[in-house]
Length: 586
Image 1 (cartoon, rainbow, N blue to C red):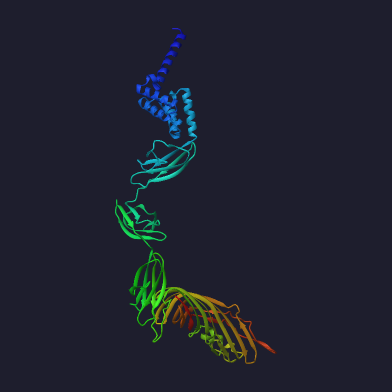
Image 2: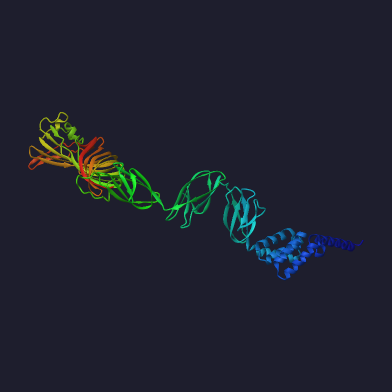
């Protein structure tokens, strides 16, 4: 057989093989089943009339009867014409991927061009869920269950992803998808807490009330909430109304309903009196004998306390919603034959108070200076320790919860002592006899000033128009000391020396106050009493020794004068004294 004949036969065989393959992948209408052939014809007629919904339905019917590249292409074209961008892009993508080799040149080019066009309007979202079998929705439309076989094609822009599964809390997220971009969303579903659901409503209309469960806001009523197993307190609050509280015991799987009844906001008023069993009236109505506890609507109320033989007390009170207001009233006995008017502001011991004190400060045990306890060290024949005298101004502010008050006390004080030392010019002291000469008198002034503060507890006991009171507390103070010495010798020679900078000490303090208060007007009283102030000067606050001091006199050769280190104060300092002051409130 000639070579050209063999080539012709081979070429014919290859043509037959390719033609047969093409027919297998895309059979013409006459080679397809009758149902598919009829449906294709109906679809093509609807397409020519631009009835694309009818065309799509017919093409899908034909594809079900006989799947082929031709039916898939027609379905993709119908979706494109209907503007169903995402579905059309998926259809063209599937067509090119699975049947691209069987498409004719023009059809393949059209499919690829439209896929490229639609890709510019869409992106993909890959949703990976920790639990299988979860329903995945995008923009409110279910797109499958986890795990998804492939990413979801969506229009570009903001897309809302929702993942739900029975027994798990739903996951919701909004993602931004750019054109031709691929976005991933990882979802870790959390199991719902065990408990029961409760439908909470408020009876009647009016202003909306916010629901609170265990003081946590859940939103406006009506509302359905899921609560853990156990006891819960449910309330509802609004600008002018409140409802509840209602205590609900939630069990596993409960489907409970709670209806709250709204009413005006309330608070609690507790009235204590001295003496007890006094008559109480609230807003003109008898409330019984003290002590009394009443739940009242929030707002202003008038309270009257009375008892035979005592002056009645009337007071206006403001109660806040949910507040527990405690009032302690001390009644005063009536004076014989006196006409007594009601007191608008009673003298009690609840609330803010303050005052000041002018006090004397004396040191009966001395200050522990050198001339007081160590006269012999100076070489003097004799010493007079002097009497430390001083005073101070104190102030305090506190808050009382009858009968106790907590206060801060501040004090500024100063004191002075004027000891003396005598030298006979002969023997002096046994400890230091060498400085006895010349005969002279030395006069000292030791001054101390400073201030401090203490946190104190105060206790009051009212008796008629008098309150007995006591306070005690601890704190800290700083004290600064100065010393001056003037000397006159028998010869008439003199000297004057001092430590102008002085020295000081920081000390812990104990403050004690005992006294009485006499009511003057309103809640202002005169305070009289005694105070105790304890501090510690350490091992001693001293002046430096000096060797440059001389006794001088005109026409006489200066004589050196011994000037040792002097202890100005040492050890425990005990100040006692009376005070007078004013007490304000509560």
